[in-house]
Length: 566
Image (cartoon, rainbow, N blue to C red):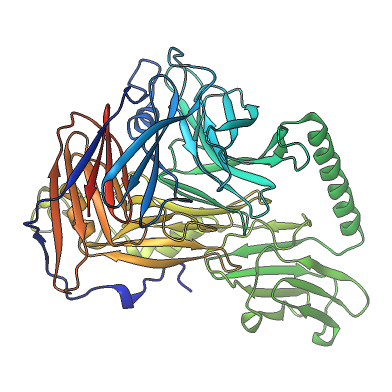
């Protein structure tokens, strides 16, 4: 089963080229009273990841809960640390701008901070990080927003994503922060926190740290599905899960510690009366468990009960070999067991329902099993026939080289670190799934319609095209191919000065903007052979934000917002 299976029905195999549109686009503009609060480069930004996070920050935010085909609601934070609300309609573009909220503490002079970040987790709430040490949980049902509670986070962070559950009891947040070891090393932390909203007193908000992931890079994509409780990431370098299910409150920490102790004790008790130790191995498709016995066993002595989620394996004399909930689902039709070594060994093979799903154990809560990995020497022996110094005795001669290195281009160079698509659950201490993306380069992220109960989509390059994928909240943990952009993988590679890329909520068009003034719009047409390209040059020295809606492309500069009519 392929987890990223393209939908051939939406792939256009007859596409030939983009035609430059002769229509002059209509561009509206609105002056901002004060400049945008954008964090510039400083000596405190000691790593490439910090510079990339700050310089590529999109300072224009859209409220997708209330925006649609007729009206758009955008937000900008100015140098006075005011949240400015911009309303735009499909006829006249941006028409009104007003102050919606004043951030209590102006930290513009603080050196060690992030950009102010704003998220809309529900129709009723907003979440704002001042970039220093506080996160504001805000009620936005009134004309002027009011603070429901202030979370003392104590560290600079960037809110990258936030979503509330349907009952509005919890707000799930994905945030990024940096940890400096010394003047050279910088560690990136991606955290999944859960903010508990008190139903009786909305002014009381506590947060729990569900998952902390550490690495050397800022994830390219990060989102949380509140329905399936999954954390989805796309990252370039290896990430490590450090901690799960911890709370910042002392009482809750003690409760969870005590619960963990009780669980461990009960697990150890349940395993004391069972069976000998076992060893197990796994590959992308199967899990193989081996049991050994001090006396011969007959096939009639085996008692087994197996479902897709649970297993009970033992002997007729009452000895339990393996019992409990499996770490992952299995395909029952592909599961088998055999007796080996004259009946003194049992080999049980379980076929994974989800290929490439990495199991951290066989049965949840039982630690008697030991995972065996192949030895390095054995791997070398199996691969020895693929390498031999007799096949090419003169490897440096031009005649004997299969390919010429001097003929390779920049695009032929392999990436230093492989890009991975990873999924982790709120209760797991290891990744539920990790998919190597290989040559499918990550391009951009974009929210799609309908916005409610959906995870933002991400776009990957597939050969010369670009495919848009969206996470599906089901038991299979799958991704759906929802849109395709013809030849966009090739087109975007030619834009050396690109800063932001996004697409419309309907997937009708995709847009690229440079660091300074140029905006490139690629629109689908009714023709299978051709689509249209528009190029717009703005009188802007620096672009700080980009949003694509149904009717407009919004571009933010330091003191002006542009609306390009589609």
